[in-house]
Image (tube, rainbow, N blue to C red; front, side, top):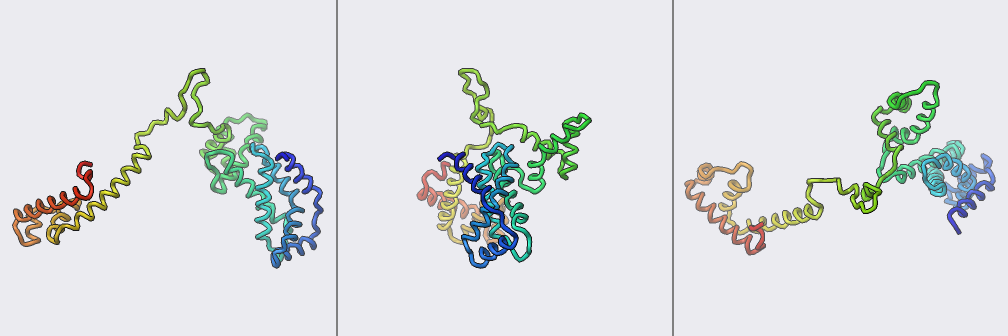
Length: 286
């Protein structure tokens, strides 16, 4: 059975489903909310599928299969049923319309382009109303320039003209693969991605460097363990701080001569070198 056949059968079943009277709708909603009556839920949703189909049909011009739009609308219908509060005395169709529309619009925004857009309410409004407003302005008695049309739309939807221009450009074009050839000529192998030059390191080089840095940090921490307290103090103050202390300053702090500080530092460096060489032969060379 083809997808088109399934869609037709779904539409036929929805159109044949009887409308619910207000009292019957209320009773079914109570049964679903209080008793999780699956049969009651099925009757509510089936009787409102014609609403889903009608709303999905309004978004056919975005180039997505009608069957997919109907399925997403059905998801919104189920969400509405899960959240509906019958005691508020609002008809279910009125409440469900918002959820159905929101579900369909979110689906379109996720699948219309590989570049995600329309994340804010204003951007969504711009996405779904720009074409309609542009067509209406273009049919006016006065010919308007693109800038004038963008200005009018920006005022109507309360967004910036820059946002209107950007969205208009996106809606006017289509996604292009970076692997698409630049020329249709036979024998041409150049792709768009060939001209995206970056001076940044390749991902594998970044990962390799990260791993090496972490490994060296571990080796250094282990090597420092071979130093005694005074050697550690001198190495930290002389080698592991941004502004290394002078020999004289360390000598005064430790109560020894600066020559003795130099001797202890050299001895500590030799001990570190030996420890690092034994742990990882390539550390010093790297």
